[in-house]
Length: 322
Image (cartoon, rainbow, N blue to C red; front, top):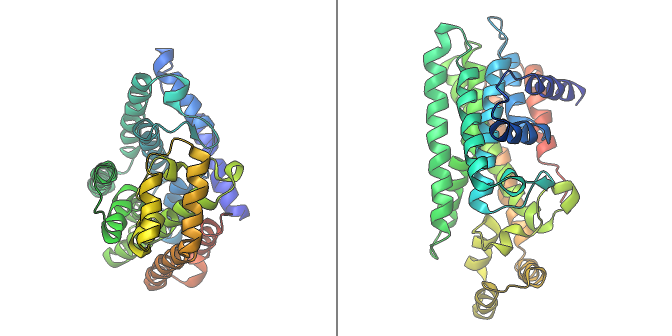
C-alpha cells in the first residue's frame, strides 16, 4: 500500500500544480474547490500502474493520468447536478455551494482541460489514445442517459442495469488501464485483457457502491447513506428485491415510493432488503465480477510479480467498509 500511497501523492501534487487560468474567479474557483476535496484518485493511479506493469520506457504518463482524473471529476460535477446530490466526499457539491450554471460551466472546463493533458503525448500514441478516450467519453454519456431514462421506467431489468453501470462507471476504469497499456506498447491481446479487467472491477465496485449506499457508514462512505432509496434509484439491490418480493412486499415498496419521511423510508426499505437477503445476493454478484476481472489479469502476458500492485489495489477497493 505504500507504493499506492506514493502514486496517490504524486497525483495530488500534480493536481495542485495544474496550470489553468484563475479568471474569472467564479468559473475557476469551483474547479479548485472540487479538485482539493480529495478522493482516492483510483483512475489516474490505474494509468500509472498499467504503464509500470507493461514496462513503459518512452515517456512519463502523468499527463494522461491527469486527463483521466480531470474527466472523472467533470462527470462527478455534472452528475451531482442531475442527481441533486447535496454531498460529495462528505462536503457540499459544487452546485450546492455555488449554483447549477456555475457548476455546469466549471465542469465543461474540466473536460476541455482533460483533453489538453491527454494530448501531451508522443505522436505515435496520439491516434490510439484519442480513439480510446473518445469512445469511453461517449459511452459514459450513454450510461448516464440510461440511468436517467431508468427513472421514468418501471420495467428495468437487472441485465439492463449491469449494462448501464458498465457504461457509466466501468468503461472509465477500463480506459484508464488501456491508456497505460497503449503508451507502453502492450500487445493488442494484453490491451484487451487489461481493459476487460478494469471493466469487471468497475462492475464489482459499483455494485459495492450500491451496497454501501444502503449499509455504509455515512462518515466513511462520504455520501448520504440511503440516498438511492430516497430518490427511488433502480440499483442492483432495488431491482433484485423487486424481482424476488412477494405480493405483500411489493405493496410495501409501492407505498414507500412517495414517502416524504426519508428516515422512515430508508428504514422500511432496508428492512425489506434484509427480509429478502439482498445484501448477501448483491455481495455474491460483486464477487462474481471480481473473479472475472482476476481471470483477465491472469491472462496478461507479464510475470505475476508485475501484477501484484493491481491485485493489491483491487483487493483494497473490494474491502471498503460497509
